[in-house]
Amino acid sequence: MPDAARLFIESSTPRASLALLRGSSVVREEAFTGDRSHNALLFAPLQRALACLAAGENLAAVVIGTGPGSYSGTRVGIAAGQGVALVHGCPAVGLCSLLAVPAAGKGRVIAIGDARRGSAWRAVIEDGLLIREPELCSAGELETEIREAGDVSLFSLESVQKLGLSPEIAERILLEHPDAVRLAGVWLRLSTAEIARLSALPPQPVYLRPPHITEAKGGHPLLRK
Image (cartoon, rainbow, N blue to C red; front, side, top):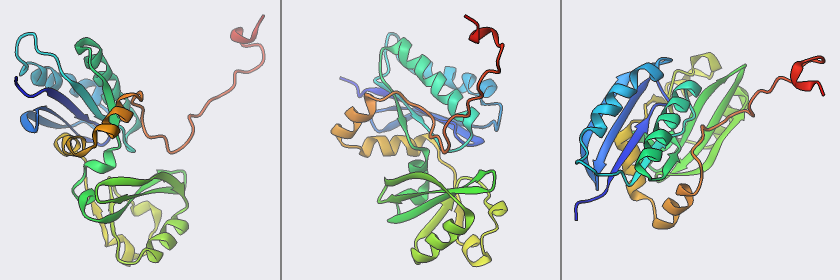
């Protein structure tokens, strides 16, 4: 029996990519730069990847990077992955995109980012496992935590220049990007129990803040009885 085919989608940063693997072998991979236009650029590479499947062959899973990162890019990747999974009758599974960068597999590392609105975020990864989920903090708190952590490695998915970190810390930050093949590598290293746990959860973007909800004003048609 041939190894199962799985599709991996990573679109949480402007450098998006997807990969089709059969077992641990890469059948096809393709990257593209989309920034805010992933919705226009994802589907041609997706079609080319799916065309590599044998006639009548179904995917065993679709695995999607969930960020943190571009909210629109991540949502496009999740929506496309869920659509493909629905057609193929397989699970659509979310994995944190921070695990799919080179630095994530090198001991203990801190991932940091600019959360806008004057705040930052950080997450802790150890030996390829997310041991502390992305959390909001101030730039001052972030710098204090980094200093207390000693010579731990640091990386970010984008420039954090606007956070105003001290030069000696700023120069330690590696700028890295997740990709679909590394996302596949993370998946292949997961235990059977962890795969089952993740497969039972609907994929959704990593939210650094609760979704903003604006209450309808008085007199809105939806409020009328």
